[in-house]
Length: 247
Image: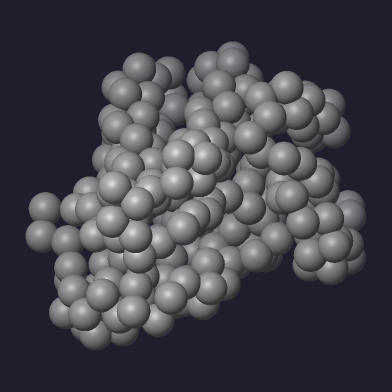
């Protein structure tokens, strides 16, 4: 059902984790890709053999002027942008209570998780409006809906992503553009691997399936959300939580 022939997708955080798996999936289904990540080596290692189908851009995603330049570069090469998937994200310092939160780290987490998603959406939306078609997917988190103790920066930044999704979904609903979010519980990614074991246990204990989700499970749902077939759902947060989410 998810055939992306003739479509152009921009994916942030494309060199690892969920961004990498989603990029590979869309590539295998015929999409042309604009791939953004700060890790030049990892990006090239993953996609150098696909230079005919992918534009590789090393970028600090928290710099709006660089985001604008990158989107312009992708538009110049491929002529349009049909899909945007914001996968770039960090957890920041975790397992600390709110009064112990480092302000600089809090700002950094918001810059990467929320502001960068705003910058990319702002940059691609004019082209989508012009073409009367678009699919935007912001990767949020179950932490953004429920809040995880010890993860103020991450939880609050993902809550902001969900709020932005609701606003943008309403704003562009009559322009052929859908804007949705995906809220995973714990997905087995390098991001999770780097977290303290106690923090991961706290999160997986809340999941009725008692396991992490897989990258493939997340990529399959993401691909459906940004497909042509998913045309009447917007401003919505899709759960991928192993039974944890109940609303």
